[in-house]
Amino acid sequence: MTKQLFPKDILPDNINALAAYSSAKSQKLTGSTWLNANESPYSKTFELSLSDLNRYPDPQPQNVIDAYAQYAGLTAEQVLMTRGADEGIELLVRTYCKSGEDSIALFLPTYGMYKVTADSHNVAINALTQELLLEGSVEQIITAVGNSKLVFICNPNNPTGSLTTLNKISAIAKALENKALVVVDEAYIEFCPQQTATTLLQDFINIVILRTLSKAFALAGLRTGFMLTNPSVLAPIRKVIAPYPVSRVVAQIAEQALQSDAITQMRRQVTILNRAKAILLQWLEASPAVNQVLNGQGNFVTAQLKDKANIDKAMKSGLIMRPFTLYGQDNWLRISIGNEQELEQVKLWLETLGSEL
Image 1: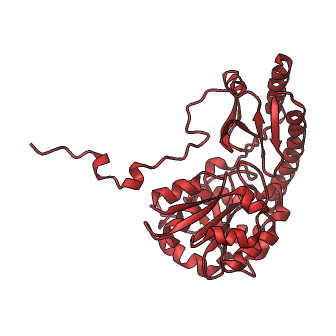
Image 2 (image 1 turned 180 degrees about the horizontal axis):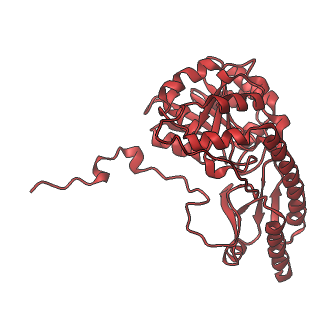
């Protein structure tokens, strides 16, 4: 009798051992207040035309590309539209790294999809630290990066909110010319737009910027991102990307979201969220139940609680935030900046914890 072949018997070792990324929505949680996925609290409405869905879409919808190029202050040739910034990460690894030979450099703790993507393509991880990135010299960083093909800098960094200065990014890029791509993930850049690395693209061929409409643009459900870089870097990626990565519906919504009045509305909402964040920081810093608070950029605040059990209390009450293990300790919590009513639930939770001490 022939032995039955199970999927695990034919899986590559790296996929068999892969630890999948655990997104905020991957856990089947129940709650009433959702502050765990860095989503915008603002919903939007759009006009759609569904009469031509029998036809394949434009692989790179020109109206959207032109609109985002204008928004970013770049040319259309420097812009590639992707299925969220996550596809941009995957395209870079798949295009520029040799499976089983190359590595990417990360500064931990940082966004988990860099590692998952590399692991799934059998690309090694050169695990460095945020401390090295923020406090180390450029020479120390370059030595540690070694022969890594891609160097990922999440800026602002998720989940710490820390910022790497543009001077340091440019110095790293210069030292790695003709050696590696420096990938600056700007998923949260709208919350500190003056820190964008787009101004560096005119001077460095080896800088790639990843963007998304999921955060400040309040379109997490659309799964739309952009890769910004030199056309020569994009050329091989255009050969690798799926033939029709952007649906007509997504293109229609993205085009409307990038109109001047919509961008003005987005910036107004960012101002409101940044003010709300400042208030949340005050609450956390004043709470006796909080050990320390990371005061960084982005639409979230990450704090360490004195008692991890208090996270479970919040979850059971319907207040859903994102627990993390950082720096070897499992009592960290990332809180997305929601609307006034949502953040009021955080305040009440903190007040309850304070009264129990």
